[in-house]
Length: 301
Image 1: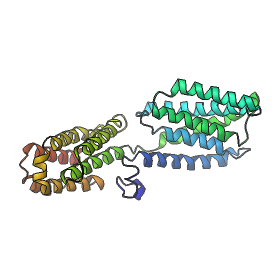
Image 2: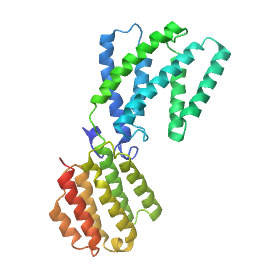
Image 3: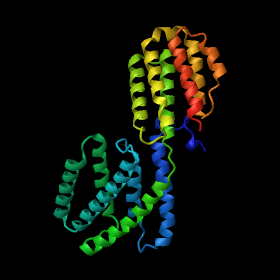
Image 4: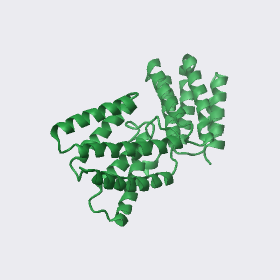
C-alpha cells in the first residue's frame, strides 16, 4: 500500500520524515483494537472520551523527545495519568462557575511549571487542557465515587492500548530512509543550482537530526547509514564547484541511489561504477561506492 511506502509524492511535502505517517498508523491500529475491546467490555456509556485519551497518549509516543522504547512506554503512561487527572479535576469543579475558572487556571499553571520545558512539551499542556474542556461535554464525574469509577474505566482502555502498542511493528527504519532521501534530494538541488548554500545546510541539518533521533529505535545496521551520509554531505558542500562542473555524472549517481532507497532494492553497482569513473573527485566516488555497498549488504535484510 502507498501508505507504507518509504516515499510518496502525496505525503512527502507535508511529512518529509515519515513521523506523521507512523503516528497516524499507530493511532488507527490502536483505535481498531479499542473498538474490538469495547465490544467485550460492554461499557454502560459510549466510551468516546476514554478512547480519545488513549489515542492522544499513543500519538504522543512519536514526539521527538520520546526516542527510545523505554521513554515511549513511560511517556504513554504519563500522558494517560495526566489526562485522567485533568478530566477528574475539571469534572469535580464543573458545577461551580468560579470554581471551574479557578480550577482550570490553577491546573494549567501547575502543568506549565512542571512539564512545559520547551515548545514541544508546552503543546502537550495545551492538548491536556483541551481534552479536559471536551470532557465537560460528556458524562463527567462530580464526586469522589464517580472519579474512581471513571478512572478505572480510563485505565481499562489505556491498558488495552498499551498492549496493542507493544505489539505494533517497528517501522522506524522508514524514518531513517526518508531522511536519507531528503539528503539526496538536497544534494541534487544544490548541485543542479536549484538551491543555495543556506537551504542546503538547513536541509542537511534537519535530516541528520531526524536520523540521529532514531539511534535507539532502529537496528544498528540501518543507523549505520548515517556516517556515510555525513561524509557525503561534507564532501559535496566542501567541493561544490567541482561537483557542479561534473553535475551530470554526479546527479546520475545520486538518482540511482535515491531510486534504490525509495524502492528498498539493491543499488546496481555496475551502473554506479560507470558514472563515478567520470568524477575527478576520488574521495566522493569512494564514498558513494561505500554507501552503495553498505546499503546492499546491511540494509536489505
